[in-house]
Length: 289
Ligand code: C5P
Ligand code: MG
View 1: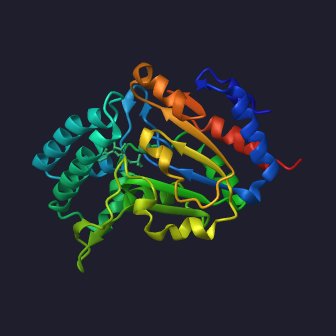
View 2 (view 1 turned 180 degrees about the horizontal axis):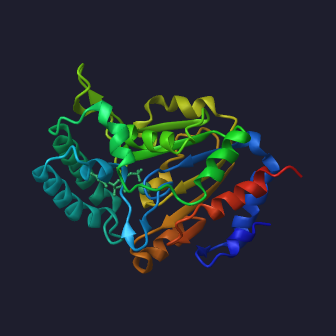
């Protein structure tokens, strides 16, 4: 059915259930389908040749517009809070206030750096960001079959939109909800717009009336893509879900986190920098029979 599921990176706890879900989504057809995806470390790569790739925040943190002192402070925050974010032994309740702290402090530091709106394109161009292999096919297929793609990101919206624009895949079926920068009349960053989206509040609490999902109420089949345990609630605002297939990229601390990921995600992709499996499943679902 989907040869890509034979890849050695694929782990599935309940294969029959997964095959049943994929078959059911295919039966419903492309007109009932929507894709809900995280951005950083899900659509973008986690690593390349043994080096970490940047998140949308890191792209700003490492850019030439940030002072040396600012860079050091932002790196210190990352080294303190990232291990907490991915710690499988802490509860979400424990993590949530700490994530608010991280994002708030990082956004305050970034807002002191006089970042210009006009510099964003160059900052992205000069960064090491990479979309996962196969991103072209993913965006092209969804566009071709008019399947809405909702990118729900706790990263920086202005940056991630620029990444997909520079990759020439920002099609009209792509809709982004994320943290956006607020610029003053001179185009200088003054703060970030609310509501603050962090890893563990990606649910309808930040989707303001979930107008987007209401519009798509007939799209009852969902493919959800994420890399964090916080991404699992991204479809909570969808009014009537019939079939939801959750695909999780397990990028970091693979051994420690495997058990939790296998319990939560239908398909777990371990250290897989490609979108092969997602594309294979979509090809099968959308293929005319
Ligand atoms: O798009 P996504 O929701 O994955 O974006 C959030 C990611 O950005 C988190 O996984 C977190 O590790 C990272 N982050 C960062 N710097 C910050 C805040 C979050 O790199 N200041
Ligand atoms: Mg992510």
